[in-house]
Image (tube, rainbow, N blue to C red; front, top):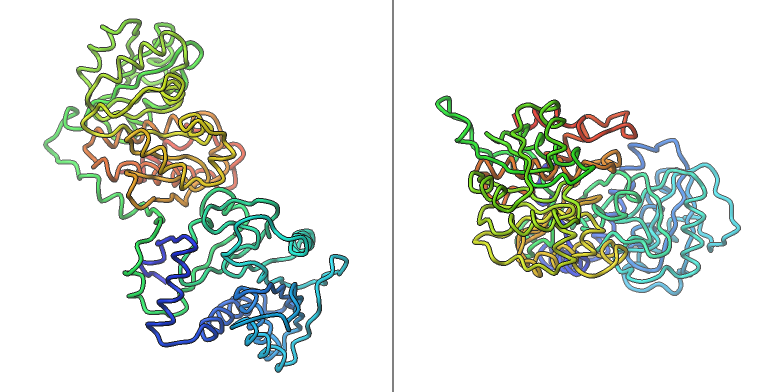
Length: 496
């Protein structure tokens, strides 16, 4: 289904608004939408689990109503089915009650949940909790989710796994671990970041055949980033060109013991297509850098004057890879911040900005900040747990506080170019990227793109996708052994 709104992501309030618009514009009832959702789930079962019995766990809301419809369809098809409810059907209201009555009339076997029950070999449909969950999971639902997860059976989640916060991807107590999540009308932003990818499994989108025009009426809270459209922002190279046409990146960092970080960032800028790349680092690292990558112009820097000379020749700055937090580090950062050219701050540059409470609103163009969650916590004077509880809010706060464009790294990296902009989510990437040096390469990719005059408003999104998709290409079957420099080869092909 190649529809544009496949990439639109919404918060819970927006999803409810989309539901209302769908009902009003299509002149259909909530029950009809529920039947469409149930049919979408059931078709998936027929396609992937046709020889399995079906067990449907139903809660009290519309999510549970979808489950009653699924159970009805299974019963009518002659599939062995049982329905386990967490709220007695006589207490249901609205469309959920109507869905129960349909299932009851069809003769669907139903039973009250007990934490001691045994689950036979089957496929489980999780229709317990919908998008309304904000706080803790109630005890009976907690026990049901625990039973589902301990069963080691295949699970299909209706709209989202029960226990997952649809707005943030946070899990407060417990969450269903699904193999497949089938999400309806509006994709929920929490499915794609924080804990979402760990619990959702494969995410299948179903628009339930609602009118596509309703998606024009609500600005999505976020959008899934796609590499191919973003690649169009890289200008084709003319045959009659030379190195000075593609910018000069200067990477500042590499305190004692951290030569690798600055080398990875510099090589990434080269691999991304920068015409010239220099590094400003400690004298002790020069020979190693040149031996590894002679294309990099390596400079020993110990004074503001020397660094300023290099800054004057550069078109883009990357400050922070291996920078450290010594007196030398602070001197290098303070000098670099006086440059009025596009600048990426990463790693210890961010830590120093946070510790020294440095203001970053002095340039004509905004700085680019690329924090991981711990660095983001320092920038906002919070703890990492708070950042991860609502990454969307955190990236907006950093953008606003520092007048910067921000890439908040992590599962489902978030890109925010202004406090009022739609957040971009990079859904590519894999756990093999959780290793030292990956962030340095990302900084280098951003710098290399900026050097080639990629519009700064698209640069972060493009860099995030290039970085993650290159890692995905090399990680197949070998995530655990992935190291940052492995991604240079696929990066070269992706950007070429």
